[in-house]
Each structure stands twice: as C-alpha cells, then as structure tokens.
Length: 288
Image (cartoon, rainbow, N blue to C red; front, side):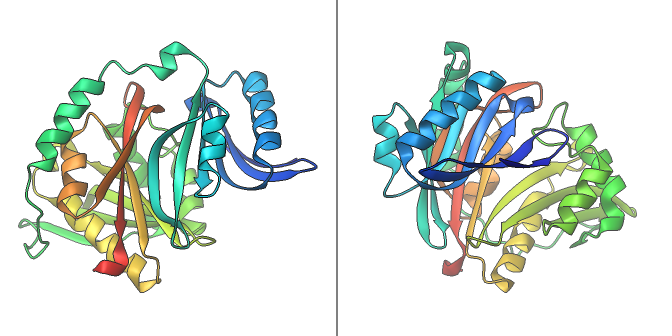
C-alpha cells in the first residue's frame, strides 16, 4: 500500500491479487471514499470491510462505473446519487454503505425535501447582471491563502478539509485547484473553487463561502459562473458540487445556474457543527 499523508486524511492505493483501488481514509469525517478502481468488485469489497473495521469508519461511498453499480447493490450498498459524465463522459454512481444506525439516519430529511421543493420553484437566472457596487472579482493566487483561510475559518465552525489552514490552501492551489474571489475594500469577502480531476476531465465546484455581511448580493453566482468559464477554457465539461442539503441559499444558487439535482448523501461529511446530508448537483458545461 502506498500512502500520501494529509492533515485530515490519507490518500492511498490499495492493491490485491484481483483489484486496485484509490481510496481516501478520512477519520475527520469517519468515512472511507473510493475514488477510482479496477478489478473484482467482491475482492475489493472484502478489503473495504477490513479497512472499515481497522479505522472504525461508519460510512463508505464509492464512485462506481455504470457497469458495476448493480454489483455493489447486490453486496448491500445503496445508490445515493449520480455524477453525470464524471468518467470522461460516462456516469459515476455514488454507492454507499453504512455501519451504524446513527450514521444512516437523517433527522432533517423531510425539512430538506421541503427546501428542495421551494428551490425547484425558483426561475433560472442569467448572469447578465453586474456586480453590486463596490465589489470586484478575480482569479485567486497563492498570495491569497491567508485571507482565504481566514474566510473559511470564520464562515465554517467545522469543515471536511482544513480550509482554515493557509498552508493547505497553498498546497491545493499548487496542485491545480482554481479559486475565484470577490473583494470589497481591498479585502476578500467571498470565494469558491473548482477542484480539477485531470485524469477524468471533471471538476468539483466547492469551498463556497461568503462573509455574512456580504451575502444577498449574488456574489456566489458570479464566482461559480467565472469558474465554469475557466473550466470550459480547459475543455472540462463535467462540473458537479455537493451542497449542504439544509442550505436553501446554496441549493438555490446551483438550481438557478442550471445544475441538475441528482441525489442526496446521508450524513456525508462533518460540516458546520455536525454530520450533514449533502445534495449532489451536476452540470454539463458543453451545453453552454
């Protein structure tokens, strides 16, 4: 097994006689994530169970290829969402397995259903409107890491990755994550990123944060639209995001920008102050 140590997690390549899989061992979020794999599903599943027991994880989720999701279903996994066009144009199926009733059960599912119903009533919005007066937007640089860390540390009580750490932000920028920021008075007040997967030509729109006093100006819509333009420039057409299911605002942003809701992941990560359900939104950027 080869590993790369991280502050919150370890990215590992697990190899057996009949399989190879890239996994993220994520103790902060009490989960194991399989990002890529090839080989025998049954043999891979047996190794996953060993890792779950060793690390006391309570959730596993796998980005399954279309030809394998029913094999995972047969093993007891459940389908939680579809990453459309994730694998160079082919869909990925988010297959999950839970190991405690507490992790499997959501206390907010009906409330989240109602939020979705209200979001779906909203009209789509074009981005022809200009920024509110006094705001400007630009591509972030590594020199912005300190201000970005302050923003994320202020907005989020807890976050699935150490975005309150400037060193970590510098690292992900150097690895290819693209950040756009909004400034007011020479200070970063809002930001969002696109984490690019160069192997499969997709990107996760993530790390969306705005200081409370600067909300309701439509800043996030402009930031995400700018990230989409950058992704198209790089010939990346699969964009997706995981939004807190309890956040009317963020789910509304993605709906109004033309993203499609394709599933919800129960207690997927430790964000704000608890394990929260996350809604999956996807967009085919090749359609304009």
